[in-house]
Image (cartoon, rainbow, N blue to C red; front, side, top):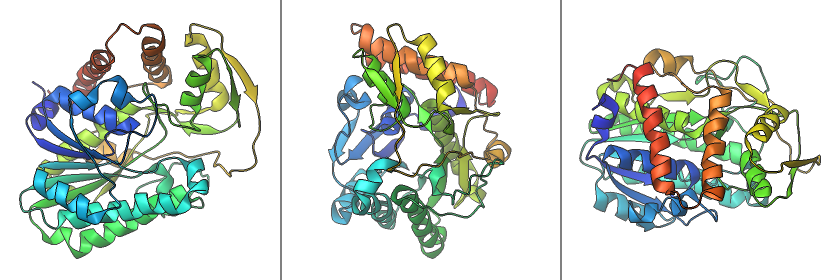
Length: 363
């Protein structure tokens, strides 16, 4: 067995936000490794959802609570007494944050505060990974890519809520966590992720597959907008590798790491559409409708040199393989319904793991 899978085998792992897109993929990966998982979430955020499509409720123990509730969050974490915590629970949509700014700050900032406060009652050794976002940086649209030491900020409520969560974490780390020998914590910042099982609103790939699967025209706001497109497994395995290294290296305690695609993988919406049209088995209709109601950044790129140097982390998928994996998952879901989604998703994870272990020298 490889070192990464072996580390997580039989570990008690708590995942916040496990019913969300990233949380469900993380749950699938850890269940594949043989971990004992407790997921806590407010609800199932989309319908359909990867959580339901892969029947994770039969595979992972679940507590439906709102992390805005400190008392309940403390109770669940204390009772489960985890070895590892991955905190992903969030209101993760930029556009929604304009409609519900208070809810966004309460979930992303105060929710993180409640998780951190709950850590103070843990007595056993516990490693914690807090997942924030590339949007926590003050985005001045530079081409070099943001480093972990660059200034935090956020013009929109979502970005500001994630920057706020990191400031809260910095305070708690220096005031409490760094003084406890049993706790170690790191921050993971990932960019724009894609992959099968995402049905969130106002995201490019989910909007496309939701429309095309019903033979409808997809409306596109901005063909020139660029993003560092990254498969969800690249980010998930970055989180897993970070926690694995945090357990071994005390000097990673309190550190933040970027996880973005390798090379120059900032592609425009137009290039993504052209790729997806070649993969989709049925008609693919597009209409460009510019919207000025929401201010969107047109350039956002991460510098991942720190993760490469200190974690020996390497991304393994290029632009084309990223979208091949993604669209193959959706084709399986929409057009090959007899195939088991749980098994199909785990097969993607296992195939990725083989390549990841080899490239990151984890055998």
